[in-house]
Image (cartoon, rainbow over all chains, first blue to last red):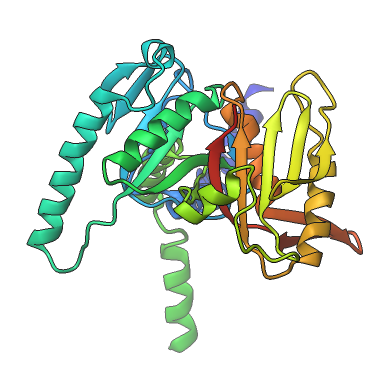
Length: 165
Length: 169
């Protein structure tokens, strides 16, 4: 009983020992090509999900790389640096946010300086506001007002692209 | 001579060695999967109120205004979304839920306005200070474009793409 079984196994083994990898390779190749196609070298400028959620919009316009102000429910960031906290900004009657203005002035100066160095770029005063979807309009208005006071007049709102349902 | 040589070659090599390629793919696929961004960022351009737009946002009719001109003002208030032409109220889209506005009604009102004034591209959106950013963006979307179902297909229509923002007390 034992010996015939052994001999069959050897016969099969002699014929082919390979696993057919063709379909697996196909799968991986497709996956890698798809991911490479979607890969953005700039990295995600979308902040982490637990801190804030951007509103969804049907806008098709691609975002530009600009100076970015991020407004979460607790803090305001400029280019990733914490500037002010939301609660104290909301409590004041003043439209202008002084700390943000100071930093934006510096950014504007820097932008102009670099624009002077090259002929290819001009300082347009473009800024992108990434705001949490739950922030009140009052806060957004204050941020927008401060931006326009600091020579950043071209304001874009960052949103998550949504498809038409 | 020829048939013999061919047969020998066949027996010698049967497959390409895929191992290095597989190694590459196995490393690349998880790396790209981790770094992949599935949410696409988009931008909404807004126009800061220029002096003329600010004038339009005011309740007073600017002097020398022609009778058949549209100064579209959309106000987001508690009792609904007010659509006004200058100081004259056009329509009111009441809220349907605790925090949801009737955006479909707003859209159809704006479509009618657009068909009456096809050359107008500007709109002013005035919001209360406590309106959520999300609501504002939804109203902005509705103002910018409309989607109409024609023969089972959604068609996009641009309504009033140049939006200025302002606050209403």
